[in-house]
Length: 498
Image (tube, rainbow, N blue to C red; front, top):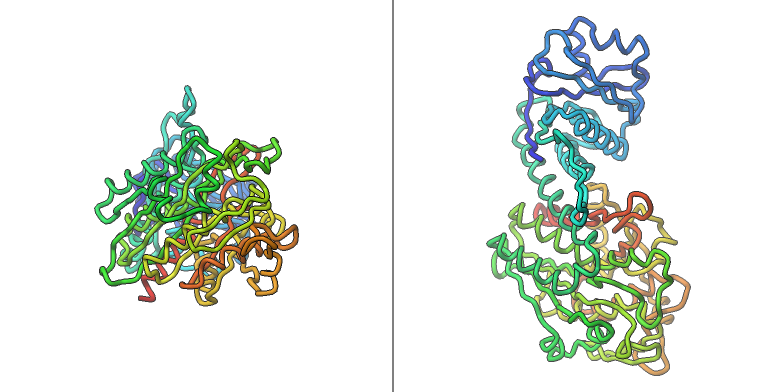
C-alpha cells in the first residue's frame, strides 16, 4: 500500500473516494461540513433522514455528490466527538480501510486524520493510521492453494492534514508508520509460519536475507560447534531433544558511530515448544509455533530500524531451537551449567525459554551494551495476571522500565510493570544447584524474570513477557506483531534523547 500526506479541500480531490467523519448524534466533522456546504446540503439531508447516526462502526457510501470531483464519498461513524480516544481512533481507521478495500475504490483521500483525538497530535494521527491500515489488511495465505484475492484491492491512501505547515512532519509520520508496519508484517509472517518450515535454520536464513537487503545490517550465525566452544550448556541442553540444530543468530545494525554503545534486543526463539519431557497438553499445542514470537519481534525491530535509518547502533540476538521430547532431551532433575558458570537444576523442562535466554544474555555482555531488552513468550502466568492487553515489563534499571512504559503509551502497544523484589528470589532455591529453573505456582512471571536477572548483573536490563500479546487465538488466530511498535518507539525516543 502506498501512503502520502497532503492538505487541501475535500471537494477538490479528484479521486475514487473521499472519506469524512460523522459524529453522534448526526453531527458532521469539519471536512464533512465542507462537502455538505458545496453540495447544497447533500450529506445533511441524508443524515437528517436517518441514514446514519454516527456510531463507531457505521459507514455510508455516497455516489455523485454535487459539485465535487470525487467518484464517491464514504461517511464513517466516529462516535461522540468529546469521547474520541486512542482505541476508538484505531477502530475507526480499521473500519475505514476495510470498507475501502471492499468497495473496490483502489485509492482514497482520508480526512479522518484531521479528527481531534484526546492528547494526540497530527503526527500521532497520521502514523497510527498507517500502522492500523496496514495491520487491518494483513493476511497470511502462503500455504493456501487458492488465494482469497480482492478484485480491485486498495492501493493508495492520501492522509490529510489541515495545514500545509504540518506537511513535512506528516511525511515523517508516514515514513515512521510504514517502517513500523513493515517490521510488524515480518514479525507476523515469521510467527504464523508452521513449525516444520520455520525452524532455527529458517530463522538464520531470514537474518541473512536482512543482511543482503540492508547495507547497514551485518548478520552472523553461530552453529552448534561454536555454541559448545562458548560453553552454552543451558541453551544446548534444550536443543538436545530435537533433530533441528540450534542457532545463535546475531544481527548488527550500524547506524551510529563505531564507539557508540548499542541497544541490544534478545528474543526467545523456540520455533516449536512441545514442553519437552514435561509434555504440554494436546489442546491448542499447534499455537506453540508462536513460542518464537520474541525472536520474530527482534527481526521486525531490526527491519524497522534499517528502514528508518536510525542514527544509533542496535544488535539483535536470537537463540533459536526446538523443545521436544526425545531420549536425549532434558529430564526433570537434570543439572546444567550455563555460559556464566552458574548451575541450574531443571525441575520442569517446559520452562525452557529462560534456559536459552540466560546464555544469550551472558553472550550480550561482549557488546558492552547501553541497555539490553529481552522479549519472550515466557509464562502462561503473565496471561493470568494481566490478560491479553499489556505485555509485562520487569527490569533492574527503573529509568529503562520508565522509558518502555512511555513508549508503550505513545505507540498504543502498552506494558505494565511487575515487581522484581529480592524476596521472590528465594523461590528459585535448589538443594543441588545454584538455582532451580522454576519457582512454583506463585508469581510465575516474576520468578521467571528473577531467574533471568541473575544473568544481567553487568548491564541495564528489562524483560518483556509477551505471552498474552504476541498472538491471538480462536477464529482470528494469528500473530499480532507486538511488541514491534513499542520497541521501535523506544528506539525513536532513544534517538531523540541522544
